[in-house]
Image (cartoon, rainbow, N blue to C red; front, side, top):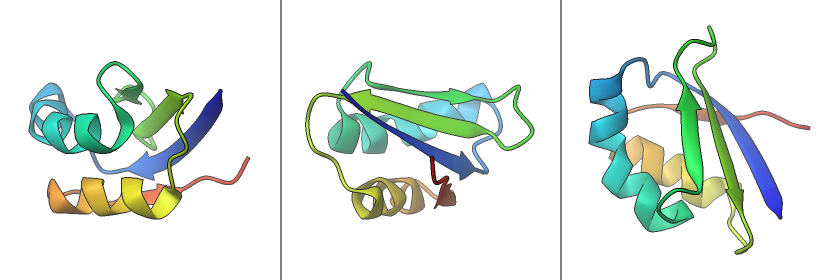
Length: 72
């Protein structure tokens, strides 16, 4: 299973609701979560499907937010 993490500016449940259709489309429903309690607002994606960092960043940007990949 691949896991990708990103630092974002998705800061509240309303922001998550706005980003949900974009992230569901690229990562799949229930394959991602945003930790809004973390100061870096960490988006974590876990999926068996191949997914590119650029696709995730594009989806977050289209939702109106910013994402920066965190190297692991």
